[in-house]
Image (cartoon, rainbow, N blue to C red):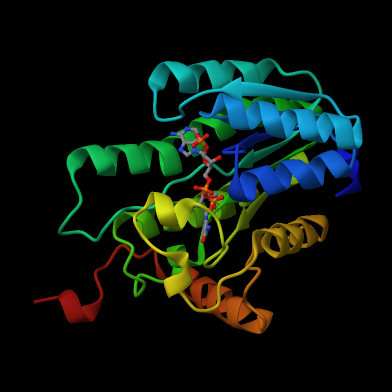
Length: 262
Ligand SMILES: NC(=O)c1ccc[n+]([C@@H]2O[C@H](COP(=O)([O-])OP(=O)(O)OC[C@H]3O[C@@H](n4cnc5c(N)ncnc54)[C@H](OP(=O)(O)O)[C@@H]3O)[C@@H](O)[C@H]2O)c1
């Protein structure tokens, strides 16, 4: 992805965890940054460190992406930011419980952050990326988007949305020079577990956040649409894709299948 050399990278949820690690890696690659989250103190501390260590320009934008006015502010900024080349839609939250426990407010917040904000921020940059014939969007999904068996309530479905959206965007935009990548981490050692009332130490097979982001960027550099850092046998993903595509020609039919006919 050498065409993005030196373009500015905007990263949501960059105050800690996966987003802060992306900020570190892109700064070390020489990109100026716009880092976005709610915690101003953490954003300022990260920005100061990255400016000192790498010499790149780092701007911060304090915003709660579940707040409509803040989200509109970020959309405006992204639509006009000079030299923007990459948007990392990383900010996300997990659900506290399963379907029996979720409250309306929790569902609304979850979907607003994981689905609505990600979609609106993508929409804010796509027209300018298409006009420039260059640009990339990195959407942070999750393996739970492929695995309803994992008991994470509404969260899993928001991540299925991220996968479906990224694939569809990539198909529509590929010819325009705009690339979309969905990254599907599995359990990664960050604060998201504590924030959603879980203990990461209760889990097996947890990936270090540095390893996760380095693998995700290796997938980005290869031009992947879907990057699944913990999946060692990539043929398994290809098999799933091939099965889905084999069904495609059979999905549109004016007549109901015989099994549904009286
Ligand atoms: N860690 C995992 O095991 C794992 C696995 C699969 C997928 N993911 C996905 O990876 C992404 C990053 O997660 P993480 O593990 O790095 O989580 P994290 O450590 O909890 O960090 C989440 C980031 O998002 C920001 N954020 C949260 N709510 C926000 C809001 N309303 N408005 C703006 N920013 C907000 C947080 O900053 P402030 O609090 O400062 O706003 C923080 O910078 C998420 O999309 C998550 O679903 C994580």
